[in-house]
Length: 123
Image 1 (tube, helix red, strand yellow):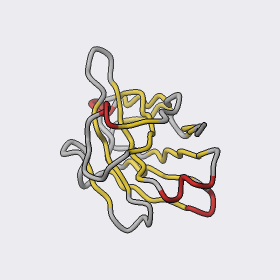
Image 2 (image 1 turned 90 degrees about the horizontal axis):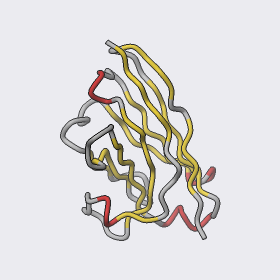
Image 3 (image 1 turned 30 degrees about the horizontal axis):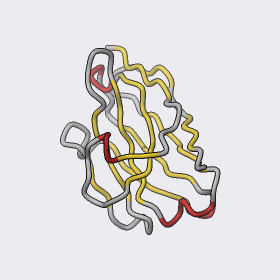
């Protein structure tokens, strides 16, 4: 059973930055596609981005493209989400998960969800 643990969330003012981390409990995660999703109150869970196992290929949702950057350190079983130029619309609980296939962006296609970390951006 894979466990993913997110950390790094918090409160920040608009224009600020945060870096989220997602650490896996098993080494085999380094061969998987990893993704971040977010869920704001009253909204559906939204695709934020995904990173391939090598870390060399990434994909982003339209609302975060150009502001958020994914990276991974396979030696630490960890994926990072660097978030810059944050705005209040980025306020949500952020989750990491594994993807079965590259290119999938629906939350229903993800597995092994972490518990989430809250990000709050004030104006």
